[in-house]
Image 1 (cartoon, protein in one colour):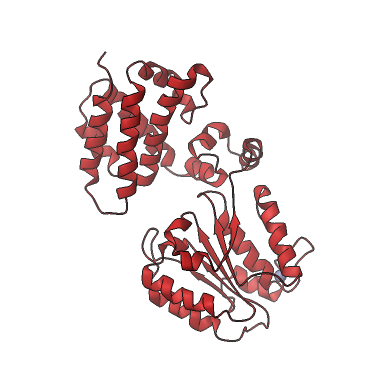
Image 2 (cartoon, rainbow, N blue to C red; image 1 turned 180 degrees about the vertical axis):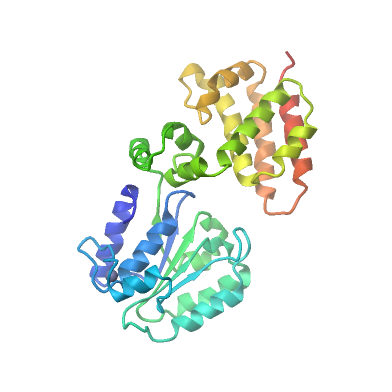
Length: 323
Ligand SMILES: [Zn+2]
């Protein structure tokens, strides 16, 4: 069953389906960690189940549901890049278009989910466009993307957008606590309110990575050389690290502007941050943010991350007043 913060979206698509108004293509958009892919899978199951319940959820026991659970349902296709961050290629899309043109084996819908649809390369997008322009009856395409601006507008405009937003903090905390996660408020801060990302932080080494970043920033602020810290940091997942560094600088700016009232992402480092505020100026922090934004934009281009971290840590040190 889908998450408590997805009920409105769920009821809307169910209503559309019941009234025969479900479009051929849906584009699920929103930040990472909100469960968009789970929603897509639940919806696919709901569309293919032969005995779904009144709220639209799949029964889990009919022959269709059993095939879905075994991932062998002939009318359900999932397309995704070979590895996360790699491109979805034109052959993958051609294959799905070919399957789409066949009659449904169960006499119902045919459903395709495209995971991280923004990873389609240009040829793949063009190939998908043909499928979008000539929809086959009873076929539903569900595109999932946390970065929809990377999709060509021609693709986006042919899909009905379904937006997923960060839930109310209380709702997210309640859900995390139900999953047995303690210190959920702190994790949620680091995940910008996305419950599944907070969960992932808890379950993977991401939280350790975060601690390494903070330790490096504090050590460099205490005049330790940058090289060995850069050596550690460059092996860690860059997008998370840059986002957290960005949040770190934002936290300093918030402390400058709002003092103790400031709402911080790195709440657990409040006292360390408070000491650093006196050593940095608003102007230099904004300059540092500019530098970071440029690096975030360059991320898809292969670069020497060791040098990047040396540069980021040196600039971090340079903008601080000596103590
Ligand atoms: Zn079923």
